[in-house]
Length: 476
Ligand code: CS2
Image 1 (cartoon, rainbow, N blue to C red):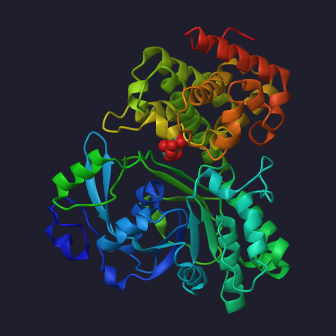
Image 2 (image 1 turned 60 degrees about the vertical axis):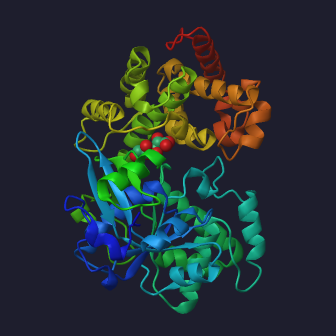
Image 3 (image 1 turned 90 degrees about the horizontal axis):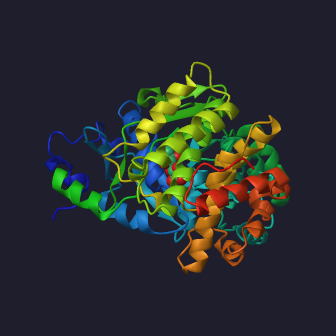
């Protein structure tokens, strides 16, 4: 078997797209934290299109948690195959990533962050990577943040957390006399840029107030929303890529054709002309982000926890379950949409129909168990904000409480059957899982909602409905 690499690119069948630029002439301009599937599916593909116009925007990846991506891509010269799955499948080999650095080489990460030519530091580190507390600010009690605060007492310190690394990189830039950068969060976190900005400055303030001031003056943190359904890579995809391209790829990526990337126009310096890849620059990302996080991601989590409880495996399969699909549509149209302030020009009912259509894409095998990861981190952004807004506006919350009840049952089952639970709070969730009220009392997830009698009643009736095999709760 021949491996995908720069020297074997020429053997690809004609219909497989490949970099339309001289990769040897590419200069890195972006340092990206978290070059996992989500990043490589959308940002990697977008910068790949940009590079054909402007070679100054190559990506250097940084994987803080594992060597997996670095080890898979190094023998492939950073190349990977992207399968766009829809009625027709398209294959593209993406060349935007040069190298992937890991925490085994902290000096190289520092050098990349401090390089004069680095103009964007971007991130897809998932919700938990932001080390935020329930109030949305940096969690100074987080073990990784505490360790970094200690480490920062030394001159040439090496951080462990993402926020620590950002501060370390920005500190090095200031000391080197370089310009500030644009820090671009691309995670499913409400107000992602602003939250990261506040967290970064708070950390810097604690260790080096001069750098904190410099960050506030020179560096921007635009909000951004990215949307493209990206199921995890599996062996079926690897086999398919080998069959279609003739080349072995250790870590190909799959996603749907649809992709939306909306970025707040707030760049510290030069803004890459990503319009060429369909990116929208706007003054206010929040309406786009709220629509996407609450409608698409909220519905995704609801499908995941309810669907798993019904013994279903994938999103498309869950959408063929008549009662569940009908419930999800009602949830989106009647319970979530009223809390969404649609961006100008967006037809909300049409948006909902389009999202539901994407969920039924038969070409995609998107595991519910993948979406179910990290519920404690996702639900606050996806559903709890909607619950709060609905209560404040005097709307019912009974249906909104059903996916939360389904998550509680999912935790209970994990505890009872001794199943692995992928969640950074699993050590605290599992011992409480037998008594759902104890989970609601976790303020870092639920804030004061757990003490709200209306919410507790709605969750109880959601649990009762699921227990009785119904999805629609009786009004609490
Ligand atoms: C999903 C998202 O895994 C999940 O939790 O809800 O990854 C979702 O597919 C993307 O946000 C779509 O843009």
